[in-house]
Length: 88
Image (cartoon, rainbow, N blue to C red; front, side, top):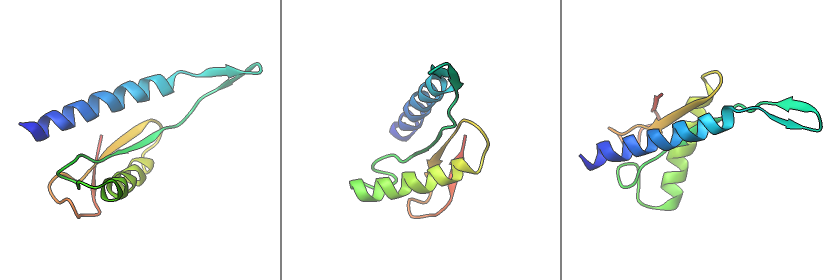
């Protein structure tokens, strides 16, 4: 159940960030939009130290970048050392 809670919280936070970043902003009369790709790693399933979690989140981010527009991706929850990621 704890693992499910981490995913729900991670998803909720990612959606809030994506929604905020989806809003165009105006700078010197120009409307600007951003494209955001996020990778999410959860402790302890994907690692317990900063370096491992960062590497897993980085791999997941590059999976998210394969999509178009606003994307996020979780590090693979079933295999903490796998290179694959779960897209959302």
